Length: 298
Image 1 (cartoon, rainbow, N blue to C red):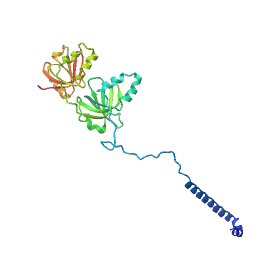
Image 2: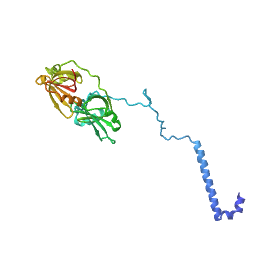
Image 3: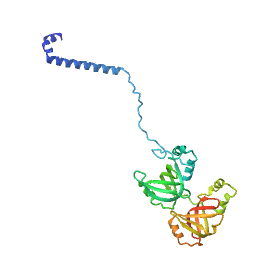
Image 4: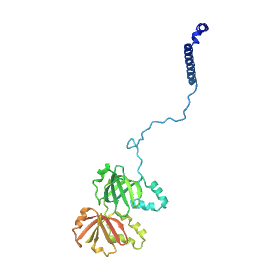
């Protein structure tokens, strides 16, 4: 090797030789470093990155199918009026927190009368609102997407419906609900009592006590007969009274909501004998209220 260098010293130290020699030397240095690092890595134990491996997602299983759903939590309150009344028992600054924690996202099973059906634009794509109520100033607003229009088309104002739905917002005097499933109302339970039987609970009891005693009769049905007293027409209903109960200790207010019944009432005269089937919605000291009334042919 030394002999070769001595014989070629002039070429090695020329410009071309220096360049080539430098390139060869650099390559040898990098090759040595590469071989050294490779041997070193083989000799060292593996180093953990400190990050746990992410397992592959797994499908939840249930008896009903591959995907499990959260169970529906139903409220004990039986109407929008009870929900709003309960919220109002809390201090003003606590009500929003109570509403969000105890009511929003919870489910209800309620029944009442359809008061109106209209389109609205609260959803980005629009939708339909079915207003349900009748026995108080607190209303349920059932909200449907436009794609759910077929669920609303068969409904009419004055219909008594039952429904499952999820509370999305409470804004006095309204409770807003989504994910609505409208079902047929429960079979009518007709009670064999008189208006006097119910108003008598208010004799010798406080209003609070009497309201508890008559609670089992609310939403039950009653059939009454008598001479027609008066018919008053309002926006969404007609109110009817009996002539022989105007000065009674148990007068009866009967509310007809369906247009077919209102049309029949329009041709009746004061004193005509009628038989009415209606749903008990309110009992007071001297007044009984029946809703969703129908004329019964006798």
